[in-house]
Length: 61
Image (cartoon, rainbow, N blue to C red):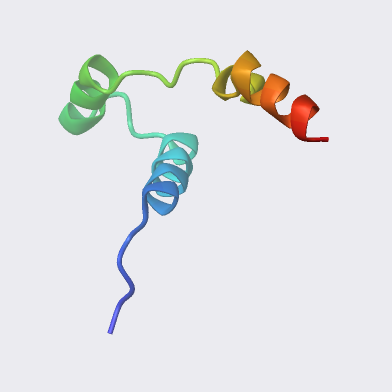
């Protein structure tokens, strides 16, 4: 039985498919180029952490 595809697995699969590329003359390749958005820049990890969390940790520590 196959395991379910996780969100991270789907992202990696999509990255691999984009790296391989498609024939530019192919209808499917043109459609994907027009409709598949390019991934944006990744946000730094610190964006997810709030100042309140750091203050709370300082008070506890």
